[in-house]
Image 1 (spheres, rainbow, N blue to C red):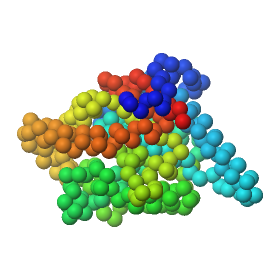
Image 2: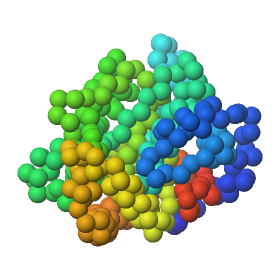
Image 3: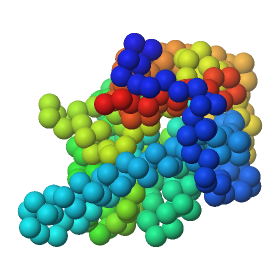
Image 4: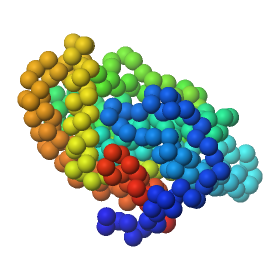
Amino acid sequence: MDDKMNYYQIARKEWQEFYRNGAAPLTQEELDSIKSFNDQISMQDVQDIYVPLTHLIHLYMKEFESLTVSKGLFLHEYVPVPPFIIGIAGSVAVGKSTTARLLQMILSRTFKRRNVQLITTDGFLYPNKVLEERGIMDRKGFPESYDMEKLIEFLNQVKSGQEEIKAPLYSHNVYDIIEGEFETIQQPDILIVEGINTLQLPANQQIYVSDFFDFSVYVDADSSLIEKWYLDRFGALLDTAFRDPENYYYKYAIGDRKDAFAMAKDVWNSVNLKNLEEYILPTRGRADIILHKTEHHIIDEIFLRKY
């Protein structure tokens, strides 16, 4: 990791000692309900990793609020505190969705008066029809497949305190944007934005999505491990998709399993691995925290950005 010179490298055992005053504010059943396909996480992970991480986020939030108050004093007027936005990035299948949902639940339980909402950047992918028209369907997930102007506009609306903001809705079952359906964000105090592109992609030469983030997390692992998790997840999807003809994976679920896995492996090598190496991994050094995973999704090291 060439960019680790800018980080404090902290072993799991050391990290868990930094803050031990809080109990995990959820049950095993609740944890199981928010886990992604084939992700592995335990209550011990919540206690050792995520409770201290929540405390660190709280420190960032207090500094953020203090700076807002100071701006108001300077301007001699009341300045409302904007939503605190947390970005979560990482490869496909690395477990960032579980991290995002878990943080949302812990932050909601820890700060009961705060409105904590979550959105993924999948909704800002161009619809498949547009990708096909542009001849970039095989580049889905790459920078050019996202409507970044729409995502930048959305984040601007969130930061400006707009009361109700609608975002496009993406379905992994049909592998496409659901036309005419939206998810609504309503004046969050904390907004978590999760996606492979959250720390990358300028909409133009001046503005990055990450410019809107007040704290950011990159979920990291060796690419060979992520490939294994990707293929394991693909197998788990096949085990359920055969029940639903509308599911994108149905045709693979009812076909030859060996051929299906050959296709998945090809997609990993030609799309997901290429995207990771060329566009996602180079953004890792922008994150405030890097959660490094090893076998079985176990977080063994944490990197905290120095400056």
